[in-house]
Length: 269
Image 1 (cartoon, rainbow, N blue to C red):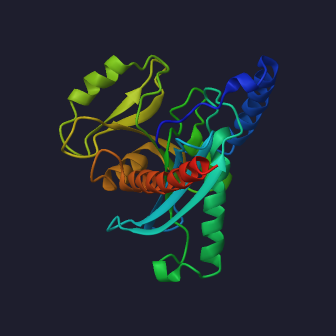
Image 2 (image 1 turned 60 degrees about the vertical axis):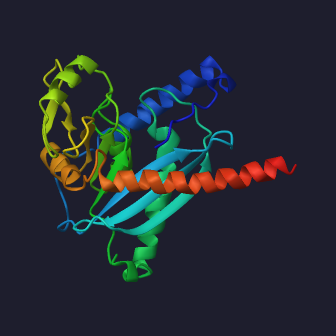
């Protein structure tokens, strides 16, 4: 996703922010009880989804959620859908899902309904994708329940988090990651990120032979660490796996068009 603008938290009192955090913590804790980190695919993977959110440079707190579905073997995009939204919730560290997940779930439900009605048969979708890649963290999160976990539990679909930057916790540092990254030579190479507590938070994965940057892969729901790495590595042509990369590219393209239209309207006022 493009850089996330922080909703102006000044419009929320300290008391209101504390209250939201308390409510969200309870919801997060309740949902986490349903989390499964064992792989349970109902069928072999034929299609894989990517979900992302891009942010408007023109509309205040405007954003666009995107869902793309790719053929797992060819990695060709067979379905895409967007949902424009206005961010209304504040940003509170560790609770990103409460700003973004509703729009991602809406897109998934829409697709699910279209599949049930047989509207996507010509796109090769007789059933919903067997797994979803989310631009964000899975269990690599201060309470072990990031955006990919939240989405996966709500929709009851296998999900994997793919993050572009390190969330520092449990003794994990940028220095440690840099050191591990130097040992990854070719596409598909990975290293597990284990914290001081012994917890395996995510895997640092080199997506392609070119470039040195890696992504942070962590299980979301109904997928274990090994399968998370294997699936994401299969989807990489470049640094980022194709489902997330395409969701990002297509949503940016779409939001640029929306921003141009909005800028014209504002200019004509």
